[in-house]
Image 1 (cartoon, rainbow, N blue to C red):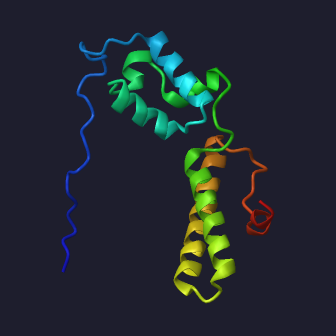
Image 2: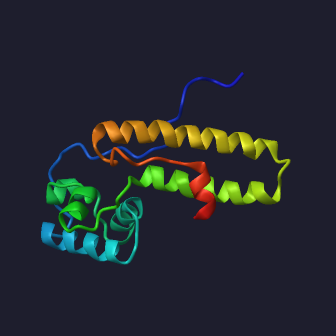
Length: 146
């Protein structure tokens, strides 16, 4: 039987909220990098990863006082729908294309049902929080046209 315990593979966040002494970027420079990467078409998670890996910026909020999404909203570059729902919709589209070719793939039919359930539950949550417009609706029939 597998254990119910989980490992500690994730990295830990810094203890202090202050920017580290070794970080050489100012808040204006970090915001400029974020806006530049957003104009290149990168998503929020990719921007955060690039800042961490390429520029050595551990936490944007500790340097600028704002999150990446807040910076993009201020510069009017933020996504219209949250990234999690966007990725799930793309995944559902790919699965629908696969199922059109492979009609008897029952495992992926079930996974499509599960993905659509995640989309519906996340959309209810984001509508409650105000991150999604109230009239936004996921329709499987509309996706075929996309």
